[in-house]
Image (cartoon, rainbow, N blue to C red):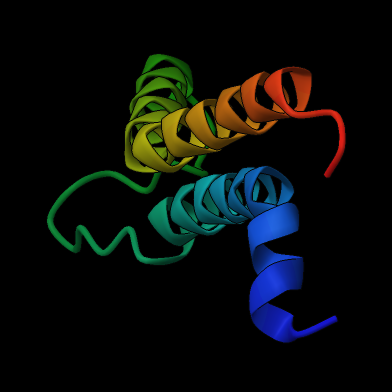
Length: 90
């Protein structure tokens, strides 16, 4: 089986894993790359609401960045199962 056929057969799973990886990388990069030298340190004591807001914003951005890939995975999965129902001989 060629790489192309394998990728086409497993396209929805590949896209789903990619969406998860994009989510995790984007979320972790928000914590690693938070360079705000003039602002308060989000890890110091007494910064509870700031930390919660930062976490919520990071999760929202991570979901936003992976939503298109996840939607593509759902569409590919739906198309795979729709074509399998129409043509069971393949």
